[in-house]
Structures are given as structure tokens and as C-alpha cells.
Image 1 (cartoon, rainbow over the protein chains, first blue to last red):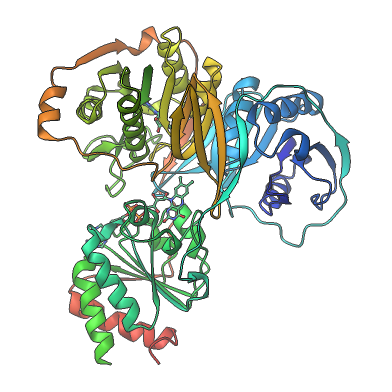
Image 2: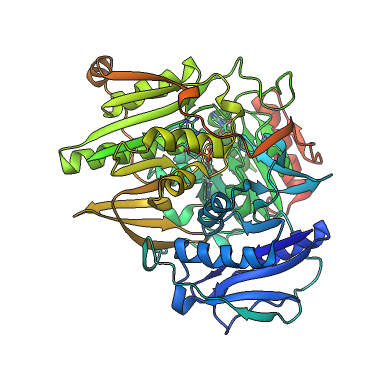
Length: 305
Length: 257
Ligand SMILES: Cc1cc2nc3c(=O)[nH]c(=O)nc-3n(C[C@H](O)[C@H](O)[C@H](O)COP(=O)(O)OP(=O)(O)OC[C@H]3O[C@@H](n4cnc5c(N)ncnc54)[C@H](O)[C@@H]3O)c2cc1C
Ligand SMILES: Nc1ncnc2c1ncn2[C@@H]1O[C@H](COP(=O)(O)O)[C@@H](O)[C@H]1O
């Protein structure tokens, strides 16, 4: 099998997720070539052909031009599988390429078993085996699902590619999210509030539990989106990545984007009314209980010690 | 301005799921249903755009069984002008390419200036349908939008990237955007607006009249992930759970030392 790996580049740098694509090809035992719109100052360590376009010419985000560059490379290479990261770059570009190729796109692949692509469904409560009916398949890989066993190495053979496809949208630059007061990445104990707290007033009991343990409180995305707390307390792919000694997740279901931000915690306690909540998969302790009862009781007990 | 919003009905993710008899999807019975969370932001943005430009007509479209009239009614009560129900009892089994084709076939030649979709559906989660619709209709599209502004025929949107970065992207109309969580504050339908919504047009269209393609992929099997195990599950009386949690924290972590 022949694969084409679509590397990713942002704000002048190669993203490490590019190596997850290499790991995926290795796992399949497939031949690969790579495609990247980036800069020669930061090329992937990779043994193979790298079809390369300069981001200073095509911009880091220009879906119609990147699509055309890719389609030209695909016509040349004839890969059976075109592999993206399931990221803001990948899930934007992949459907455009898939449609142009009349190929199936399978999103957020976490495994390959007996030729079936495995994807999560319903907030990871269920899994699906998926098979493409088309000759070529486009896939996007869930972040962290595939990893290289060692450090990446090699020197790519560069093949420069060009297009004159016009831009359909104009990319006007990046903006950083404003940084806030607490740096959760340094906290040793974090108690996080999820949507399960139900109303903003209940955030206080989460903060109290955190305080009783000498830690900080964090939150999942819905709590931040509802403006119950500040963005700098959000844990996850679009918030902070944390690795405390203890992480207590209160009323958090355990969506992959949340787990990605806290799964390096040394010890995880989850408090959830739903015994099947996916957070149970990574929790060392799952307390099946109403947080409105358990959190205050636990806080009292800890204070009394 | 003509605006289209696409919404999907999905099960409440806290539901107890069962796999259906064919072993290829979840069993649709005994589930609580709600509007796909991402699509609530899409409706809100469409209605805000209408309020901004004044002269606008917002169509909300959904594909599914009779049950999916519920999210349409909610969308109408939130301020959409007309509903389109594409009647399809088997929509759950359709792949993103088929769903997008149905929507694109409906929208083609209707002159929509703006189309809003969610960035992904909570159950299938392919994050494909919106971008596919735009490509099928040859429209500019911007995915994963967390800020949206419209002025003088041009959209300025901020795409959310990983790790606290946003990309500022501009496009002229017609365009499609896929809406990410937190884009705005979806309004709650008020009782008067729920009453008003009952008088709004709700058109039913048979899916066969819009579906002109075959699926490009199939789900061969749906199943529960193997429990990794290892974790301790505590259930029962809250006082007991508290004691057990404290004991475990003392034993296994240094935090209560
Ligand atoms: C591109 C992208 C990026 C994202 N980035 C992030 C991110 O950085 N961080 C993040 O957190 N999310 C992120 N998300 C959102 C993520 O997919 C989930 O929607 C989100 O994490 C869900 O938050 P939650 O677990 O608090 O809410 P829900 O999924 O709604 O879960 C609530 C939980 O509370 C439980 N519960 C309810 N009542 C009680 C009670 N009384 N006592 C105890 N438990 C109760 C329920 O059983 C449920 O498990 C992102 C999504 C996308 C698409
Ligand atoms: N059955 C459907 N009816 C109407 N819109 C849908 C349907 N399925 C998906 N969509 C739209 O496409 C978006 C992305 O869905 P998906 O590609 O399945 O993740 C959703 O947020 C909806 O806006």
C-alpha cells in the first residue's frame, strides 16, 4: 500500500503531529511520501520523498491552493491513502481533497484492525469499524493515537511543487488568545468543573475543594464558553495542557479534547453520575455520585483531617 | 440576504447506548434526543446576521425521521423564518458524502448568500458535511469558527486552532462557515416566540427527490470499546465514597500527607 502523508506547519514551525502520520504508515507497513507547505528552515526528519511548497508563497492557510498542490501530487504519486491529522488544518483540507478525488473520507481514525479503520462515535462511548468503498481513501488521525517508537530521523528528498490556483479565502494572520493569571501547567493539584456542575453558583464548591487541597481549579470548555470562568482555566486541546499530581474531574464526561489536556496527570479522580462516562477509561478512581453532594462532603472531610 | 442553517438531531450523550440488531449503529429507541450542540451556535449566528442586516430570510434544514421536527421547531422559535424537513427514516445510516449531497442538491440554484453548519455532529462527528456542501456548491468556506463578523458583503471570521491560537480569515459572499462551540450565546426560545413559530412554514421534502449519489463508505460494525479497567469504581452512599476517596488519596498519592 502507498500512502501520502500531509504534514502540518504553523506559525513558522513544523508540528510534531506530522510524525504521528509517519507512525501510522509504519503501523500499516505502507510505503509513504510526504506533502508539506512549510519552510525549508524547519523540515521533517523523514526518509522519503517530500513534496514541498513554500508557505511564504502559498501561505500557511489557503485551502484552495493547498488542495490543488495536493491534487497534483496525488495524480503523480497515486497513493491509495491520503493521511491528515484530525486537526484544524486537517479537518478543513481533507474533505476538499476527498470530494475532488471522489474518495471516501474517514475521520478521526484511532486504530486499524484487519483492514478496518476504527473511529470513535458518541463522545467515545462507542466505536465503529469503517470501510471505504472507493479506490482511494482519505483519513484524518486522532491526535495522539499513533506514535513513533523512537525519535524521528532521516533526511527527506525534496521535490518542489507549485500551483497558480487562486485563493478562495484570505488569511490575514494569527492571533494569540490572551493569557491569564493562573498557570495551571505548574499546578500540582487541579480540581476541574465540567458542565455537570449545572449552574455557575456551583463553581464555588469546586474552588473550595481545590483550596482545601492547596490546589487550583480548572474547567472544561462548556464552563468557559458559558463564561462561568476565564479561558485561562480551560483544560484541553484548545486550553491548557496540565500534568498535576492529582486531577479531580467533577461533572466532566471525558471528551477526547479534554483528555488530551490532562491525561498526563499522575492520579485522576472522576466524579460523575454516569458510570459509563468516557472519563472512567482514564480515571484511577471513578466515584459514581452527584457532585453536588460528594464535593462539599469531601471538602469537609479533607478540612477536618 | 438568503441564509441557510443545517441542523441535526443527536442523542443526549449521557444516554445508555445499545447497539442495534444489525450491529452497525446505535439503537434509536429509548434515547433522549436534542439538537446537536454545535448547530445551536449556527442558528444563533444566522439569526444575529439577519438582525444585523435587516432584510434577510433564514431557512433551517434538517434530514431525518419525523422525530427531527423538534429541532426545527426550536430553530424557528429562535428566529429562523422557515423550516425544511427532508424526510428520511434511514438518515442515521447515511455517510457524510450522502448527507452533504442532499443538502447541496436542495441549496443549489436557491441563491443562498450564507450557509451555516455545525463544525461536527456529536454522534457521527465526522466534521465533514459543512465543508463538503461548500465544495459541492463551489462556495468559499471557513471551518471551526469562533468569531464571526459581516460587513459590506464580506465575512471576517476567526478560526480556532490548537493550543490557544486563532487564524483571521476573510471571504466574500456567498460563503459557508462551520460553527465551533462558544461562537456566541445561543438564545433560549421564549414562550411568545414558541407560539409564533407554530405559524411558520415547515416544508417536507422526500429524501429520494434530493439524493442522487451512493455512499462512499460503510460502517461494518459498531461496538463498545473494551474497558481498559484498572480504575477503581466507587458507588453507593456518599459518606462511604468520601471515606474511600480519602483513604485512596492517602495510600496512592502524596497530596494528603
Ligand atoms: C476542536 C475542539 C476543541 C475542543 N477543545 C476543548 C478543550 O480544550 N477542553 C474541553 O474541555 N473541551 C474541548 N472541546 C469540547 C469537548 O468536545 C466536549 O464538548 C467538552 O469537553 C465537554 O465538556 P464536559 O465534559 O464538561 O460536558 P459534558 O460532555 O456535557 O459532560 C457533562 C458530564 O457531567 C456529568 N454530570 C451531570 N450532572 C452531574 C452531577 N450532578 N454530578 C456529577 N456528574 C454529573 C454527566 O454525566 C456528564 O458526563 C473541544 C471540542 C472541539 C471540537
Ligand atoms: N442529518 C443532518 N441534517 C442536517 N444537517 C446535518 C445532518 N448531519 C450533519 N449535518 C450538518 O453537518 C454538520 C457536521 O456534521 P458531521 O460532518 O456529521 O460531523 C452538523 O453540525 C450539521 O450542521
